[in-house]
Length: 104
Image (cartoon, rainbow, N blue to C red):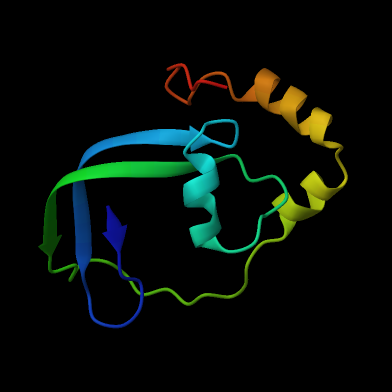
């Protein structure tokens, strides 16, 4: 689900099947360049096979203003060696918030 937080009110819902794609997987090399330069600490892309798209009014969605990008991930990751990032993900990213395996 995506919400418009400025401009005309709108909610966009995408229905289908998604998967997380990590840097060590074959598809990464063909898809990742579409997003520009690499970001220190980046972990995955989400690939969606969309079956249905639905929009709704979004009249109840509040407006927000963008202040700035956070640099916390970049700053943290730039202090790590590549093998430290791999170790961290193996330790901390094995399961999702709801306890499902992530593939890391």
